[in-house]
Image 1 (spheres, one colour):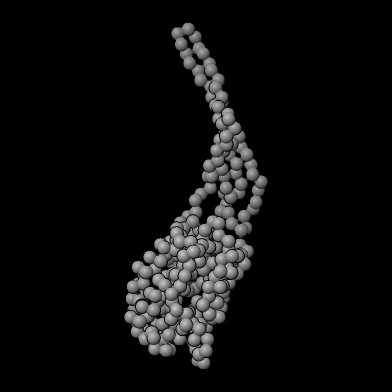
Image 2 (spheres, rainbow, N blue to C red):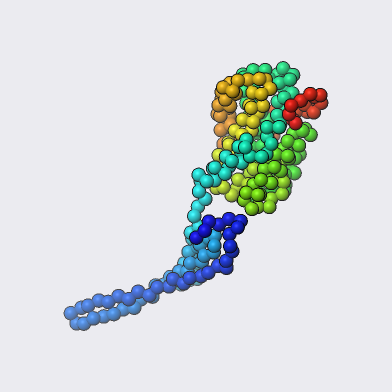
Length: 284
């Protein structure tokens, strides 16, 4: 059977009865006895082009269904997520610094150690934490993505932060729609990512952790260019953030909307001040 996808042919469900009759023959010293037995449970397989279910009906009328469709391939799902988060994916993350350019220009981030502290606080206490939880909420089966879109917009700390999350989220949605044949409307980046990744079957903490890693990686590369830092220094900073990323991802996977909050006021103020810089390389 061909792999299902947006191009797959649709066909009506087909039911194939599998009621079986069993005949048992037994020979004794007095002759041969033949007994015909019909099982008390009937079974039927219902199949479409994309799935197949095995149904068993008992004499009491109870129907038990077992989905025979193959489980999502975790390796393929993981590769799809890594592709979406890759710098090669056209979300335009390289154009935004999340206010980091202002912090560098103002002398607050001038070394690898200062960058590590800045990004660590952003992930643990600031917008990184907020976006992790928004991604987690968007991943859930009962997610109201329209409401989460409005919430994510309200939580953006400045006009440029809002433009950043909306532009990247729209770009991600547009490209994933083209690849997957979906028709999702634009949404801020964490909502768009969680919505797209919900069908991958990956653990929420893994999706959130990889999204936070991509967020940190983008900002590290911005600092490498603008501080400037050496490439090795930048990678050392990124590696040092792994424990914080893992902690926040694990927390966000089971947190709820009432846990939203931020204490990254310095980064928020840098993002606001960036809007008034006369010369700048980044859009935020």
